[in-house]
Length: 462
Image (cartoon, rainbow, N blue to C red):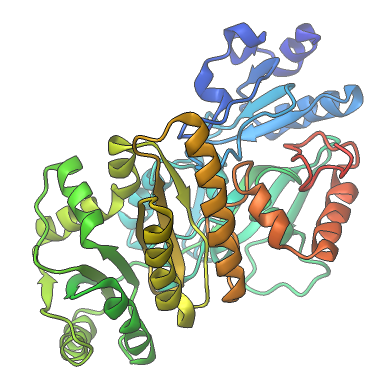
């Protein structure tokens, strides 16, 4: 690779790491560190112009490019399969504008979610998307259409992206969307880029929608005899006028791992499972809806109602919920799954998971977003050797995804496809749909240099 060309384009040799032997391993993988790629150069751009120059050079020379944010993904979305250049966007981390008149913020893609949320909330504003990993970047959230716990009320990242500035594979800069609330002006290219995992364009600026910060927020814990009973009550909660912000489900066996990992005790230890529900809005409205939730919990078979009125207690409970993947990983290597089924099928799917767990002998930890059907599973390796783990995991994964699709579900609710979930996505997705996706890829990146994927958005012959 011509590193001198990259030095010239970037103008700062400190922001170009040349040679595969000098690139830290963390840039070649994801947060789990089990899928690894290789690269010839690591570049830290600071501007759209620098990215445009790098992409133009890569286009002319047929060099693969993999954009990445904080690398917190769980499915290998940022693993450079074909070498070439890694574009690390973490230093493009400025909040460029917060516009109260249009309730928008314009930010660079490397802005960290938790920092951005803290800043806008200090101004009485609110950015609702709330994925579990708060150290992810805004650009990464957009690239995966991140969801999270507040999706049941507020929606997902896609619902808060008003506009994007992007660099195409050939180096051209495009601006799609705007600060306007409405847009019926031609094809919605913005929506194609959102959730495309860096395969169609490099995001360089983001115009985000903001809302007023809720005056009050209160969480409550609803213990149930078992998870199936808890999930079946979700329909009643959603059909009521309670308008919950979040409805999470957690099994007691999962909570025990979280307690051990954090050292934080969880309430109602005799329960088999829990729903964790949050309500927000005006103080009087939250009070009234909390009482309504209390009455509904009693009707749906909850063994109690625990309002988390103390801010510290609520933070501790949510800390346990938020650490569950890491808590499982501390005990055993695991394969994370984030498939989604219609809300009406959540209870049936979780029951099927328990049945499959008994039949296969493979432990599966279940939790997730009960309010939108997004089921998170941690399939645990435990003491299996490499051969047994690979064979049994593949069998169980194919079985799980087939069942999910049978119930009307999809491969991923928020993690994306990446590398890890390709086999299950390909097995269950109509060939005409895959062909249409490849056509979009061909139109925007005919040389297939941007984060190309074997057999998915890449050419079938690869």
